[in-house]
Image 1 (cartoon, helix red, strand yellow):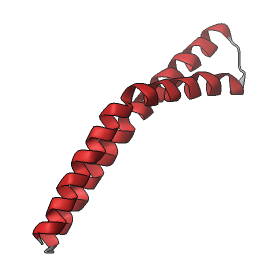
Image 2 (tube, one colour):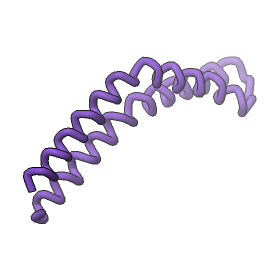
Image 3 (cartoon, one colour):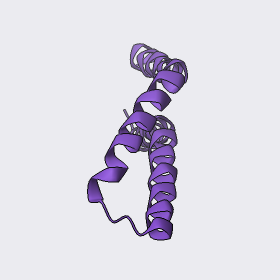
Length: 87
């Protein structure tokens, strides 16, 4: 494996990690911002109010995005295994 191959593999790994993590993290961020905005409008300053909606959002987004995530990981693993086999 040449250094260029290692850098390309690291680049692909980071891209896959971003594809898997970014949608869920962005949804949790949006829900957190909406709840914070609601708290600012109503002056309800309960710290634990954000956890349940965020957890539900993450759970639902995982259920919805799971096929995409599995396809992305499968394609990455196929390319990785073919790279290992080709030497």
